[in-house]
Image (cartoon, rainbow, N blue to C red):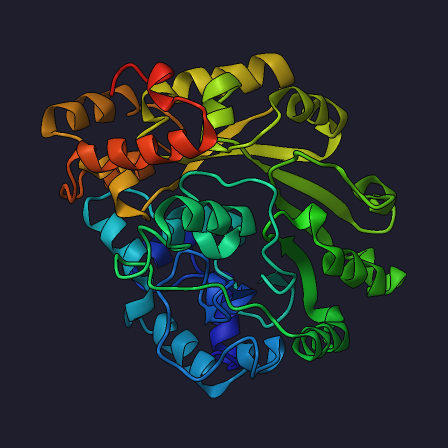
Length: 391
């Protein structure tokens, strides 16, 4: 059905809202993006659950996976409204009548699109080096995070393994990286954007090698999206500004979870002064500030939004919600606090994502958060309790 001309003609004429209302399974991402994580797995998107299949980034090239029989089967199931186990996160969000990534973010981005062209790549194949150890980051995405957790808890995956995460960093080998890059270059005419993430992507040397390999003619039709902490704009004489004329567009999504000292603690050891200087320098290519909502910033979202808009003219998004380690999730507040927060953010852009998480049942007492942050504070010599009086 995915390649059937009658289906293509039908979908070109449908009412998008009606289609999403009737079809509770369809999502554009399995049709439009190739995603691979730092555990070496291909998934349907960054929010999807892991799949029980043979395809990994070390045994399968990206486009072979994308056009595999198993992916074709998933796409065909979606077109007929059959739900996919890996998409449970979105289905659960929709149970409360709220917006999910499927019928919100991705619907707005792609509408209904099933043609195998203009494909996006979000492949974590360049390593996990990162200069920050953000308190909520999955350890397989940051070398500094793993080192801190090992030092403090004697476990580089504290709070994740055995608690819903269960995933460890699996570095891609030299030959595997080259095979993946060769595959991308052979199919470069199908690529419309590349979402480059890490680790900290602007500090990953193999990422620079990849974008230099892309032919100039092909690059004119490709947009580069970066998920960056923006603490460094340059790497060994290389600058992202040097590639602005080569690619169709370059847009930075800046990961920031607060401002001032609270931001410095959450995203330790962040140099706030240098970061804000970089915000000013890179303003012309910054798309959004992307906040990941957790127990330590959920009371301050209006203030965070206003701070970055008034001082830098940058819009803030709140679609990302901490769901691991689970004891940092906002679902762990008492019912009274949850209702107060739901009311507080009912008119906030992306407020439905916050509401949906708050409606989920409590899993841990807040003592788990406090003990965890106390342990990090002792290692960092930076007292979190002096900043968060509410705890």
